Length: 140
Image 1 (cartoon, rainbow, N blue to C red):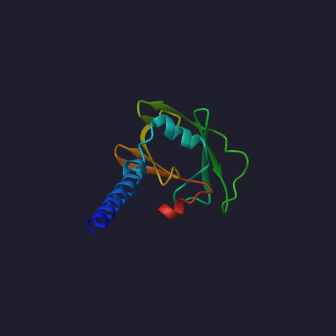
Image 2 (image 1 turned 45 degrees about the vertical axis):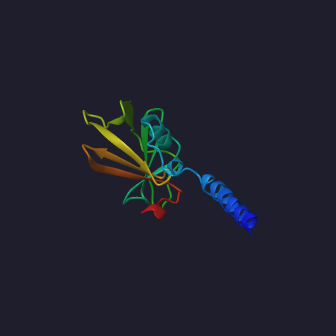
Image 3 (image 1 turned 30 degrees about the horizontal axis):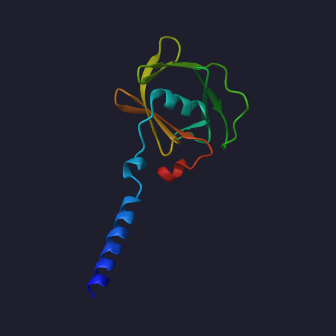
C-alpha cells in the first residue's frame, strides 16, 4: 500500500511540474512598445482612415510624405489630392510640416494589433487613424 501511495504521489508531482512549467510566459503576451521607426513602418505599410471621417478621408505615408485622399462612401480615388505634408523622425517623436510655418511634433501611440494609431500633441490626443480593411472596430 505504501509503494502505491508513493508511486501516485510521484506521478502527481511529475505531472504538476510538467503541467505548470509548460505554460507560456505571460510576459511574452505583453506587447512591447514599438520604436518610432517601427511606428513609421506601420504608417507606411497601410492606408489609414481618419477617425470620424472614415468613409471620406484616407492617408498614406511614403518617402517622408503624408498623402491625403478624399472619397465618398469608402470609395477613394487612385490619386491623392495635390500637396503633401512632409514628416521627419526627431528623437522618439514624429514632426509634420503642414507648410507655411505650421510645424507640429507628435508622440505616436500604436494599439489594437497595429490597427489604430494616435497622434498626441503636448499630451492631448490630436488625431486618430484606423487601418483600412482591418478589424479596428473590434477594439473600439
